[in-house]
Length: 196
Image 1 (cartoon, rainbow, N blue to C red):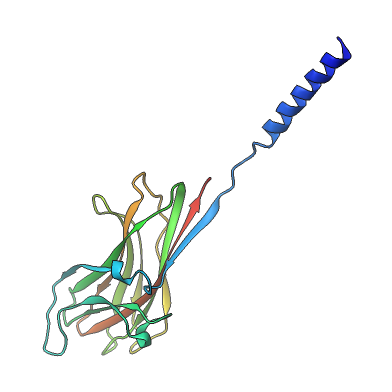
Image 2: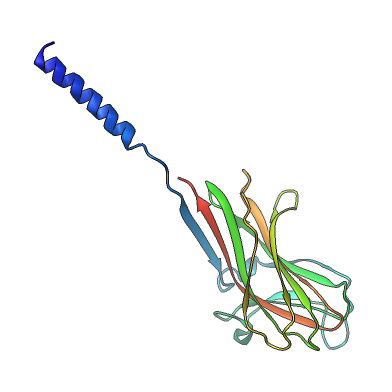
């Protein structure tokens, strides 16, 4: 075999080996979006409630985005929710959300703080639903039982695998006790593992 042909064959084989060798495993990255309600507060809407008994002290506006900085964890806006005098009462406030292309698994977190009267236990849930069909993908909950202005604590959902339809709905749900229960929520974060 001629030396020029031999060198050409060696060069082609070496180039193919290098290209195959660099095709290694794809590495995942983390995608993180935070909603502190300062810019996206208008996307949150009251989406459900049940078994409410209203009295003359409070109106039936049971969940809303507040602009009272004293109620917020960061900034000046937070979710404010309350249920009144019915152990079966519940109220929910949520927003639409789109997960990233290529997401393999996601987790949502949000901070909550109880502002409870009479020290009655209250359960706060963070839920993720598929927007089309309203089916549950993940949820996390916390029993809040500290009376009056407890410390902020984080609720974390289980991880979920986004569907081909990346549109989800994330909401906070407050279920009440036998007296008035007030809870503030702030700083939603959604973190997803994304493959290239």
